[in-house]
Structures are given as C-alpha cells and as structure tokens.
Amino acid sequence: MNWDQIEGKWKQFAGSARERWGQITDDDWQTIAGKKEQLVGRIQERYAIARAEAEKQADEWSHAQKQSQPDDHLASRL
Image (cartoon, rainbow, N blue to C red; front, side, top):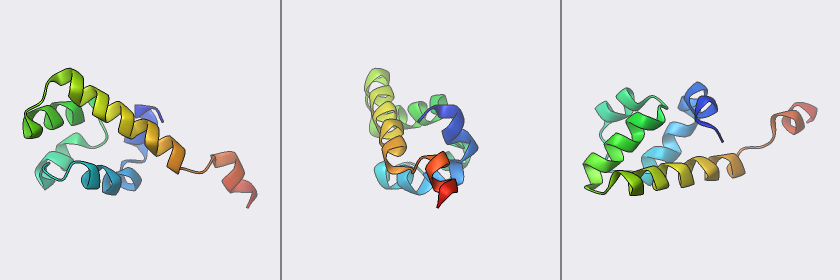
C-alpha cells in the first residue's frame, strides 16, 4: 500500500503499527500520523538502528497492510 493511502487511512492502520513497534510512544504516534519519514525517524531513534533498516521495516509493514486490506472494488460489491 502506498504511503498516501496509509496517511489518509491512518486511524485504520495505527493499531497494526503500534503492535509492530511497541517502543514508539503515544506522542510519537500523534506526530507520525501516517507519514513515512516520521515513522522511519522514530523507528531509527527508538530502536537504535540504521536508517536503511528502519526504512526496510516501514516498507515491509506497508506492503503487509496492502495484503491484509480487501480490495475496495470487491468490498463495494458485497
């Protein structure tokens, strides 16, 4: 799923992100608000990992969100 979609539907995805990165604080989540660069920075900071690794984790998570979301056109048929 692309980051524009994630940002637009952040409330739907925030729970999954919180489960994935439990060390990120509530204040951080408010700042992140679905923005990839903010998420990557917070992952890097809270987990003391390289930026490339933080980006990899964020990208893997975003791709997993696409797989867990039903297709909009199929959902509208149901």
